[in-house]
Image (cartoon, rainbow, N blue to C red; front, top):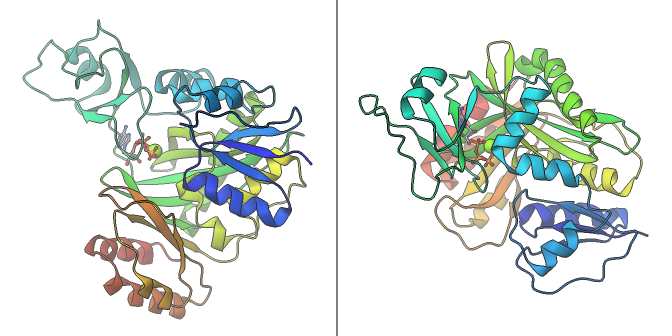
Length: 358
Ligand code: ATP
Ligand code: MG
């Protein structure tokens, strides 16, 4: 049986491994800084849990293997400029943008994009890092970008969105696709804090979202799980960014669906039968960001804790909590019980979750 090798060994790799095990699939996440190479067979499969990696003996071996899936697309998406260009080519709506070259002035950017302009590093950004609001200092002709960003960023129009939603889809080798219901996402300081899915009021957007992601996956003959982060503006979706992998906004599927996004990816990669994911009830995910593990969380009925075993640092994702409870009264009771066991910001997140319950 072919093994699956995953480029990257963070929490996403760990959760892929966790999902592969009961399917009797051997899946091995590989640290990107490994100096060793691995006994990879010709008929093994290589996939990723991240879109950026350093050049090391291990990443070279994995990414140059003939069965490294979606190789070309990964390179395109890893650079925000080529990602935006691809979306434009496919006529998929995205936040208006400009490639920031040495020749562009701040004035030109404000002229073209409006008065709020967000600079984003072309590669390497995550969790809101690598973003910088362009300053309006009297229309300075000189473009001031943070040190080291020169020629390596794009400028985006600030979108006054209603809410952020994401669509997670899967595509198998035979071209069949399936999708989860849209996830509604709350960000705090550039980092995902909470997800609810499904949310009944987002159902009218589902078809539009699936058409967009289908077009992208089909055009690239993509295999695996892919995530489309969107801004919702009225009844329209604008793509914020694409992640060619399982995604934080899909963690709710571990508790809320018959098929987790991790198992869905493993099935697509290993060419196992594809099924429509069934939804059990509204799924809720709270990200644990820079907080210590509190074992009292485990005393709340319905709470499912995933602790990543990483060192706790401010702003770092160190785990998440899922809840999927079909009885509304119990769900509300569990959320109330959780509140005092968590930092203040989670009080706000839980209120946001409650406002999205059907
Ligand atoms: P991720 O953790 O998803 O990889 P990231 O650092 O790659 O995040 P983005 O997803 O591009 O960055 O942006 C992070 C958040 O910043 C978005 O979810 C959104 O809340 C806000 N944001 C990004 N781009 C814009 C924009 N053009 N207009 C308004 N808000 C934006
Ligand atoms: Mg994002």
